[in-house]
Image (cartoon, rainbow over all chains, first blue to last red; front, side, top):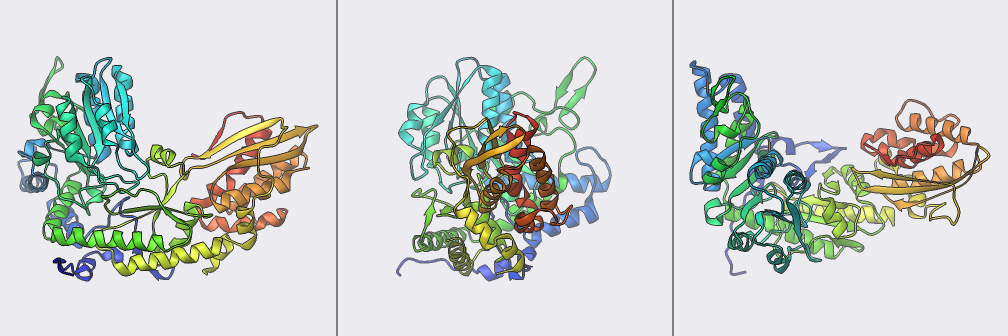
Length: 411
Length: 147
């Protein structure tokens, strides 16, 4: 081999994740449900622990030391997110409960401020329900029409169809960066360019992408980018909406109440400037701090090596799948990240999931909150193994030994 | 294999899962009930001929995991020919069996499905067909959804 393969010390990385060092049903845990949620490194656990043990106070209002420390920690995390996504300014980083709330915020704003009867919203056939249902609601409320770009048998968006379904009435195109059900990495640079050429705004659902690929929202030239902390080695209940400044100014407020106002009387209220305009109520401060810690932790990881490592895991799994009788991979895109969705002849995905659990192996079985994808591939559900930085080639091999045993049991 | 897992996937269950009995759409039936488990995508439709207070014939079709298919298959075998009232009693006993509220007395060979009680996430698989039967016998025409 002539190409340089970056060294990735997976064992050293694993030592930072306390949860991985346990047995399930008497077997060492092999956690392959990372597309559902990733585990948390000690640095994240410590940051949340430290906040509650030392700095807990409400933010943006206290004059006492604890409140100032909590506020500083929260705003430092916002800067970490800004830098991680290469957003132009911290005011463009809105904290939400997760990707779902981030998309709802934008869809709600579009329904109220942008979409008119006859307008169109374009999504793709591989979206998670979180990037389908909010747009259905926005269209229902505004009289706009939801358009869906096709995917092919490999699980790739058909670019010609995506282009054909853009029109001068398309107000926004919303699509996943990486498919959670299939692993497809969408050619988002091309899709963004096509959407912008048609005059549409662009929202990227980055929930499944950010742990596996670097994101530069300015280079991408997207208008919105949504992500969840818990799929990024951070806590649940916290996520981010990046929004282009002009769009965030234009969109109406989402939830209202404390923290998002400048002045309130019974006649009217004046809203706070960005980013607080979209952050009503006491935020999930510990979550924000945990997310900041996760991002800082990720900064210490060698990204090219991490990507190469995860590619090796997926390549090994794909290669072993070809050697397992009766196994079919669902989703064979040229570019994939972290996800192996599959069927095993004669064995329902849920039976696979229960059986593997007794081997200490955690996978997901079901529709992965992407029922239209299941319909497209004419399957009721799939089994899904999904990888993260701390998984090993030996774990992939153990998965396939266990799958072979499942196959023989049910044959 | 782990004993709990072996208890869940006994040979008879695997056999009914692979080759479900009473499977397919019958030519004639008086009642039809659809059932869906949105969590895992299991779907089945139950077809029955109810006459003079008896379950004269019952069949199902659909797709799902080994547990749901085996449970549907064995249910059809057990309730066909029974009085509707007795079939409902069996439904109640079965429901209590798989949720751990009752032992295996008066349940016959359905006992082999009792292992599912150790798998809370799988109880819905075992009861999907039975809920359909219950709806049907109660004259409730709303499709079954296990949520």
